[in-house]
Picture (cartoon, one colour):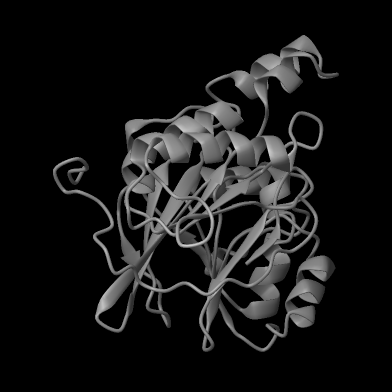
Length: 285
């Protein structure tokens, strides 16, 4: 479930009936708590909070989540340092709650069945990672990946996206809307730069390049309020997937732009009956 996506606050919930984790906590603590209560999820223990990077719209409620749930906060060393410097996080993460992650180094989250692999994502924060998460469901694995605030698509990003059945990926702006919009030139350059955000077109190209028959859901995240619309993001991605042979909609890939300030529905993930990716095309790093 997505609790929020965009500059107003980012937070994603991944869980079972017994436990859950959050990826980012950019909402105010009270809002985050109220959403979980309204969705009847407040009694499910949060076992971990994974942080992608140290910008306020991803960490605003991090200390509240950690203290309220008694859960550790996972981030790279540079992101933890960045959170210490960020005035948007008024109460800092306690030393006892800090856990440090490294690129391309998988780890098992205690008290869950989730195996997490962080990977480098270019952005103009202190550091930034995406998360590839897999877990066992019966005799099969479920594979999930999240990539947000991504300036450019790298080999690492492409590698992990290519392995996912369930994908949350940034589709931040429509290039023409950005270029013709109200942002000053410096901010336009920043958004389009290697430390900025993926455009609809760049996201669509990534989806087309990494499409495989195991992909089930693609959620488009971090849409700009000023330089994008859900319809533009959807149509751009839909065309690219269709050209790659995907059926988008009933019986195929579910494609969904995430709302900026409205929580999404709760989606049930199930293992794919088909191979997730070709070892010939996507060798291990």
